[in-house]
Every structure is written in structure tokens, then in C-alpha cells.
Length: 200
Image 1 (tube, rainbow, N blue to C red):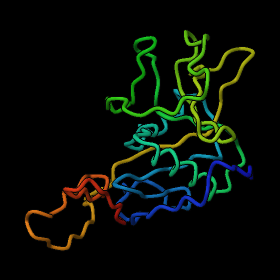
Image 2 (cartoon, rainbow, N blue to C red):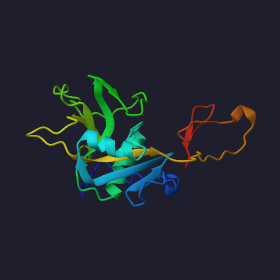
Image 3 (cartoon, rainbow, N blue to C red):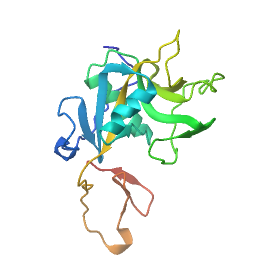
Image 4 (cartoon, one colour):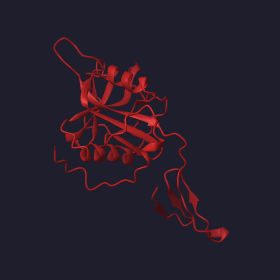
């Protein structure tokens, strides 16, 4: 296993995999977290198109990385699974419009983790995105397909929505003037501007 100095005991609460779609095989490579189920397909290697096809055939898509916390979660999960590779496909690509990156869900790209110099000058043929384990989870653009003299076959991560997911939060009643607001990330924002992250 690669000893990655970028991952420092990042521990996340995991949801119950019983809420994952029933057609998915229950194994250590299926991890439920924050309303989604993640299938780490790390023992097979395909190009981006075939990897995405595998995910969609089971009702999901290649993983959407919505925040730095998501990126750390994926890296930490790879480490806990003793991932021996270096690269995994994620769902981001600019196959439809060059230079306009999209997630397979159609969600707006609000977070990126590009490595320095990425996407690079070969962007016209490198339309799909990988996460590099040895580069601290930074993203690189790669060709989506295999070529005669160059193979782009890598493991991948599929994402599925959990069934009947409800976010778990608890609040302690406060006087109305001090009542906190709850965000979807599980963070309490108080009127004074402080924030407290809660467990899920």
C-alpha cells in the first residue's frame, strides 16, 4: 500500500449499507456515507467509458466529488481498502463541450481539486478525469478511451443514492434569538457566526 502523507487519520461516520440499492454486492468495497453508496471497483481496470457503463448498468454513475470533504473521504476509503494502485476514474469530464467540465448527474461543478498545471495542453484529447492517490487526491485529465499504443485502463468509483435516506440531526432547544440554523452538511450556524460540525 502506498503510504500517503496527505491522509491524516481522516475518519468519517458511515451509514448503514442496508440502504444501498439491493442489486449491489455487499462487501468491504461498498461504503455508505452521507446519503450515498460508494462502490470502490479497485480490482478491475477499464477506460472511462466502460467504467461509467459499469456504474450506470447498476443504477449509478461514476462518483461526483462535491467538496474537499468528499475528496478526503474517497482517499481515506481507498487507504482503508489497501488500494495498491495510483489512479481511479471519477465522473468529471468535458466530452460534450471542450473546456466545460460536467458531472454525469448534471450537477454544477462547484468544487475542483486540479493538480498544478491541470487540465493541461493536451486537453483536446484528455476529456476525462482521474484522482491520483500518490498526488494527494489531486485531479488530472486523461484520455477517456484506449489508443493503439496507450492504454487508459484504471479502477473506478461508482456512486448510488441511498434508499430512504434521512439525515440524522439533533438539536437542543434554545431561546428564539439564539436558535441555530442547520445546513445540509450537518453544521450548526449560530447567529454569532460560529459553526459546529455534528456527527451523522
